[in-house]
Image 1 (cartoon, rainbow, N blue to C red):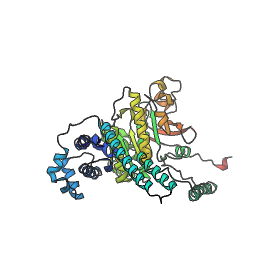
Image 2 (image 1 turned 180 degrees about the vertical axis):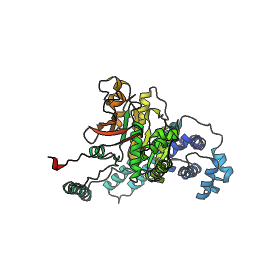
Image 3 (image 1 turned 90 degrees about the vertical axis):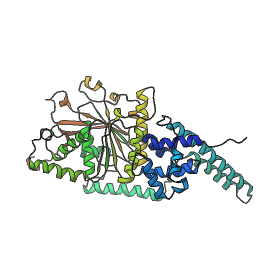
Image 4 (image 1 turned 135 degrees about the vertical axis):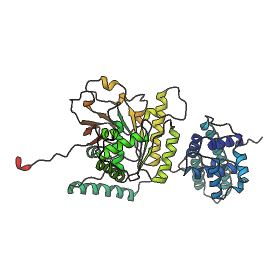
Length: 449
């Protein structure tokens, strides 16, 4: 009895689902490869999808035909009619994309196991092959089936890696002795003391910025993002709470220094209006990519980030904010869903090698606490948020609760720092321009002492 190690119905349903549903489309590109599909027709279609994915997240038959023509693959599928026949008669918008992918991957792995076994069997009959070599190659071939990194254990730390690390330490020591600023190993936020304390935001890090509503977490994130673009680093900003117009208004006022009230009232002078567009254009310089789509699922955010990395080489991703995010799976508890979301965001950061900065709401406990200082336990529906995060920044502005208590001052609290100490960083906040900024560096007149 021969068992078929493939499913035509499964591959047809999933590829058709990719054609008809953007979430299916993104999930397929993220989690499948051509070689895992058994049927050559669907391999060709999947290659066409991948080419389409580079340009557009919304698949259509017309776009697919254009890509297949460009690849020279359309005729192999029987032309346009052949493509239509391959992807028609499918149940639309099914919620079992993961089940289909699991089945396809399962069959693919089984075929690979059989192929590796057959190859090992043939090699075993070649008596001239040393037994140790045979065992090693056979073992490696099976590792490659289960390991997404093709069985690689990682880099071997050798002499040149140690020398590279030593040169970095020597350069930092030289700068310290010469009184020069230390170059942060991570992406600088633009806040002097914060960057000094945490060493910038490192690639692969998941960073959480948290505060109560109205304290300024969106403003801080936008300030960091514009500081990064000013330094020439492209960023991707997802705003699921504010519209594009509202975000641009925040950027305009914080970068130009023109009060937001004047923007809203229309009382700008000609000079102020020219100042806004001149400074904002120079600051963002096309390196600020903004999406204000609401109801976007995590899989689509992940897919967009991968494409943005390929096309724009983005240096960081900002997401405003966590509690407005929804995953692709159904969970009995919202806390479990958020835990899955933060886990996948951490994986995304590592995959792209850039920091992912996600904003999160605090519960009301901080408001009830004397001093109103936020704590990690205040994260709403926290689950494993604080566990997955490498850095957690809280924001404390005492004048939110008492306008006479340190007005215009704010504290960025490093609540968690996986690679260093926690601390408080004192900054200034201008409510009229939604701008957080460094305190002036204190200088002393030696002649007065």
